[in-house]
Image 1 (cartoon, helix red, strand yellow):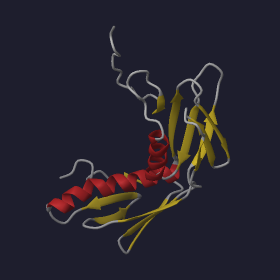
Image 2 (image 1 turned 30 degrees about the vertical axis):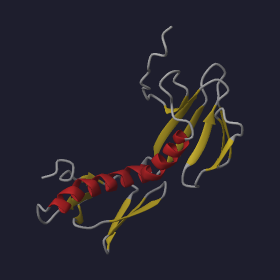
Image 3 (image 1 turned 90 degrees about the vertical axis):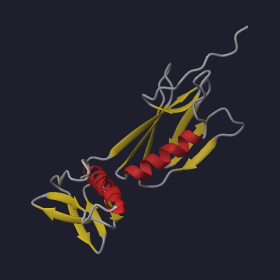
Amino acid sequence: MSRIGKNPIAIPAGVTVEVKDAVVTVKGKLGELTQEYSDVTIKIEDNNVIVERATDHKNERAKHGLYRSLINNMITGVAEGFTKQLELVGVGYRASNQGQKLDLALGFSHNIVLEVVSEVNVETISEKGKNPIVKLTSFDKQLLGQVAAKIRAFRKPEPYKGKGVKFVGEEVRRKAGKSA
């Protein structure tokens, strides 16, 4: 039995979960998310969501914990939301935003202008003497991770000086340079 899959998911106040035609819909104060599912059964019993599987077939075992985690992330997202912070490490690296347009100066000849989807809120924090920070918040964990990964991919942190776009708290493995 999947240790993750067998745990029930508590539904907090202000969140509604609806299961209909192999689609789970979760609505909350921050938004609405839907997820299709297969090979498992999803039931709502006394304010808990329970994910069960019929047999021990390999596909069902694999999807048991997966769908439980996806539904848990959906419920957490519409109730509380998720936040990711990216730090720009490097001389002259800057970030600014006008609404949903993120303007990044990452050492290329031109600035990178990224139009961020409306479900993800963008905020830039620039303090004197500290590295600029791009703060992303959303109720959709998958979309948030995808946007953060796209921003990080513009200039990944390199191992010699540590310059680049990294997540706040991420440890960059450093290498020794050439020795004379």
